[in-house]
Every structure is written in structure tokens, then in C-alpha cells.
Length: 460
Image (cartoon, rainbow, N blue to C red; front, top):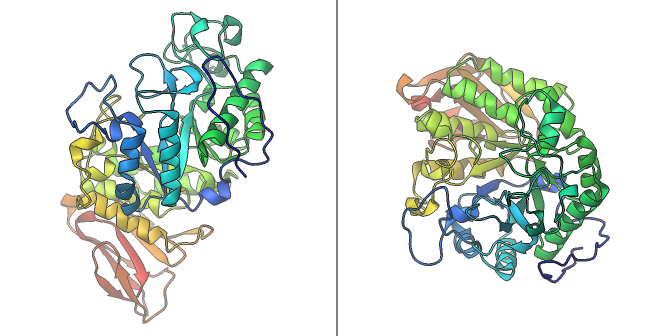
């Protein structure tokens, strides 16, 4: 059960409260599709939808998100991940440069407006995941008195910049982007971070956490933090190596699925063999990781948007089919459904209002259909590979069969005979994307991807 705490003053900290559980468990989060939002870029509430400097605040607010919950719900999403909510140094619209952990960023709204957003989400059965940062704070030119509660130099590692990403100590103890690196080996620092996170979750009724820069913090801290803050956490280990990710999932089972992300970029945008997708999926399972607790994605705020790397909409649809009909927890990055194609940060953080929140957009409609298909799958239904070659991959989960190709829109139709499938002879199948009907014969069925568009089949 959640307990509410009042918002305290800038220099105050609430008493640490013993609570057996916070938010929702990983098992519960498996039923969710997450819509990732940069709060500052989603919707304004002043009636102005002007262009803005992408390196500064653009005017998005908590109330703006609240006003667009029907758009998110209609897309088929039942959870949102919002950027960090605490006060930051000037111009840090993204939220990753905190100055006061116990104050809400006034650019986004008040503490009450954040509570209102969470309540409105819960009223629509949308869960709320908030981004938190435990690795670093904002750069205040070494004047740590401006940071609450870490207001002394002794709470930080000695100043140095990361110079060697192959040196784990260097990665963990030196500064990322010149942001002061918290000494998470210090027991007082550890306890404050746990105390603050529990306060954040109980005060605002949050359902889970996205945890920033996990690989930049020593694993001993994560062992402490996961136990001290008992909720589902989706960590960020920005690395595609399966063995490296495994070292963190042993402690924090929920992580962003970077191995799958890099594989999708390789096989789809570079047209490399789809056998690499098979290899990644098999190697992830054989590693012992619970892939159902990972967060799979096509785009996010730290990477070029998928359409920036390949402008073919059917190629991106293939990527979204893999994550939405796969075993991990899917994440849709705001704007992808409107065909946004921004490049490196900050160009991948475009204002959403430029799209007009068009619910008839071709990609919006496609993602909505995929989300509807996912709802037909049990959370514990296993992924079974049904067909693979260099340019084609097909699989099923439960009663849903999916197929994708890396050929793209300009290669014409792509067809394969499927003889290994979950259906019976005589079954009639419906492609949820095109509306085409297919009959299953004694030797299976022909699966045709029109102009490279994915196919999602269920029994009629």
C-alpha cells in the first residue's frame, strides 16, 4: 500500500519510511506497453505551438501530458515513461542535471500538477514510470552548496573526466559530460539516494522507475538500491554486449534491451542477414537473462531516431513489429508514430505539437494495430521461431504469427511458404495489418509481405 508524504522545503528531507513494496513488480509490468515522453517536448498549455531552440526549454508541461492521455491510450499504450521531474540547472530541459532532489522542476509545473497527472493516468489504467538519476548532479561550478541534499564536496568522487570506456573504474568514478559524479560508495550518499527515491514514489504514487546511467555506478550500490527501493526498475546500460548487460541484470533484472536495438539497426537499416536476429534472441536466452523483464525499443532520446537511419516506413514498421510482438516490454518513443526522423541529440527531441497529434497517421495506425495484436498474447507465451533466412524472419507467440523482412518498400512483394506454424489445416487466418485472409492447407500457407510491410496473422 502506498503512503503519501507532504512536499517539504528546499533544505528539508522527509523521514525514511519503511514500506514493503512500491509501485508495481516486474511481473506486473510485463502487461504494459510504455510510451516514452520528454515532458518539455510533448505539449504546452499556453496555446502557443511555436518552434523553439532544441537546446533549451520549449514549454511542455505535466498538464500538457495530461491533456493528451486519450491520444496515448488510443495508440494502445498503457504506461508512460517521463523524463526526470526534479529541479535542474538552467536550460536542462531534459532533467539529467539536478540541483534539488526535493523540488519539482517549475518549468514542468507544480508538485500538485504532477500528482494530478499521475492520478489522471491511473484513472485511465496508464501506469507512470519516472526517470531517476543516481550517478551525478548538475554542474554548479564546484559550488556544491547549491545542491540539495549533496551540498559538500565529500559526497563526490574526485574530479576527472571519463577517458577510457574499457576501464570500468574510470567509467564509474569519473564525470560523464562534466557532471559531478556522486560517491555512491559513501554510505550516507547511498542512504540519501534511496530515501529520496522512496519519497518520490510514495509522494506521487509512481508505478516504476527508469534508472539512468547504470553502468556508471558500482554494482555494489545497485545491490543496495534494488533492495532499498522495492519496485520494478528499468536500468540504462548503454552497451550491446550480452555478457556485459548480464552483469547488471543479475542485480537489476529490468534493463533497456540494447543488444536487440543494435541488432535491429544492423539487420534492418544495413540490410545484413536476419540470422543475426536469430542469434541475438537465442544468445539472450542462453545467457540466463529474463528477457521478458527487458525494455525493448526502436528509438529513444539518446540515439538518432530510426527513420533518420533509414527513411523507409516499412523498415521501421518491421522494427516495431519485432519489439511489440516480442517477449520484452515494448517502449514507443514519442513522435515515432508521427514519422519523426531527428538525428543526434538534440535533434531527436523534437516538439510533439508540430505533428498535431494526428491519429490517422500511417505509422500511428500501424503501431495501434500491433498493440492490439499484443493484447491477444499471454504475458508468459514464449517466442517460437517459425522461419528465418537472410532477408526474412517469422515467429509466433501464443495465437499470433508475425513476419518481417529487411527488403524494404522498393523490393516488391516478399513471399515465403510457412510449413512450421501454430495453426491447423483448414484454419482461416486474418492479417491484422492489411485485412487479407489466408487459408492454411496441408503444406502450410504462403505468407506475403506486400512491399515489405510486416504481416501479423491470427485465426479467424
